[in-house]
Image 1: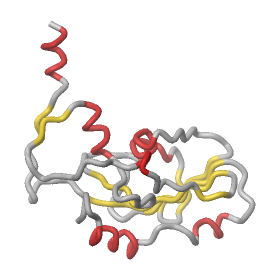
Image 2 (image 1 turned 45 degrees about the horizontal axis):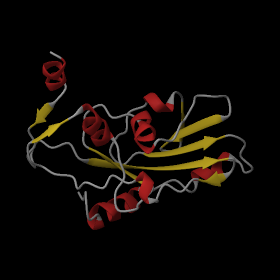
Image 3 (image 1 turned 30 degrees about the horizontal axis):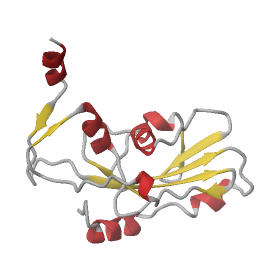
Image 4 (image 1 turned 135 degrees about the vertical axis):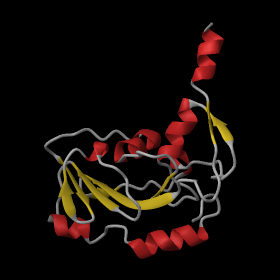
Length: 161
């Protein structure tokens, strides 16, 4: 019976170029005033994105929600509906706790409960964790811009546009 129940958690998601969910957003995290580098191999989703029918486990579905490719640590790839910023940080294994010392900005506008906010195409998140030693504008000026995301889309080896 356990094996039969396990099968219930598998899902086949039909994808074609016309129905596939695939978009990108930008993000940058500053912890204690220092930019966090997410370009290392430990943060990357190695498998290429596909547009064919694939059976997926819950873990694979979670990874498809929000992930990084090609050692680009500031552009998130989305392949599942309903992806939120918390999905990205879950997949990066980077704990973001709501706290008085955490501030988030989406497209330059202060946002609350950032881990529950949806990741939208070409949106840019600036996340400030802990004490910051510059005014918010200093960090907001380092937000990932749409032109950078578009460039990544054009050059991505594993998960382009």
